[in-house]
Image (cartoon, rainbow, N blue to C red):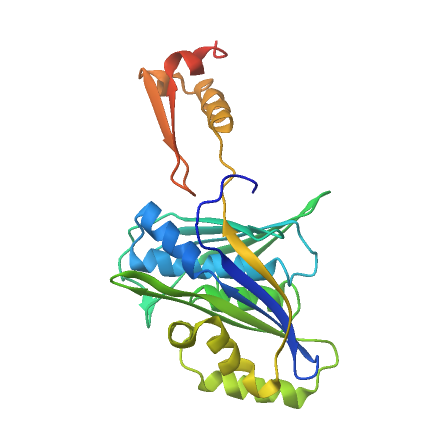
Length: 288
């Protein structure tokens, strides 16, 4: 995703160990990114929450999946109020995302968390040579529960997944997440301590609003002495371009010539909202 940068302020991705290197963790802050998308795409609060959680999850999964990708695609297609939600991330920290029902109302939620409903979670990991695709059924609940289920069933890695986006009337005020995983031969008592601690925590959205990403990390792992090993920026970026849209319209017009009935055809990128206009003469040049 080497297109133009869309947000003035970057987010961040931090990685580290805890409990004397028996646990590894990754922490994402996507607050400025999801607020940029909310304003630019006119998202409802519910849509902003769901998409923000997916963006945070995709960013973190690029660092945690067994087959290390150059690019990660995370897509939930369910019966919940958001419809299809998609997030893409790469190892350079570029993110983009879209939500099908961008004006979704407060239906089908649990404590403000949009439920994904029944359907499929698709995870695609693209390397420089090939792609790996995994599909798991949605298990009910929101993004965090389904990402944890994916890591458990597809990657066979037991993981704690905390995701939160706090949307107020004035906009998104916090957003991000934390994933914690046990490393091989981790002491079972460490895992029991962590599970008990996480069960006592308030929601991730509240922790992020009150203390930011560091507050979420301290609440979850403070007693286990988290150590930061790496930090990198997260940047909102889109690689859509006019030529690609034009080629797609020409291809469709070969079987659906009515698409070119108007003097001008306008299309909009579902990710960044960029609009492209094509005169009929531009599109009919290669259509017989």
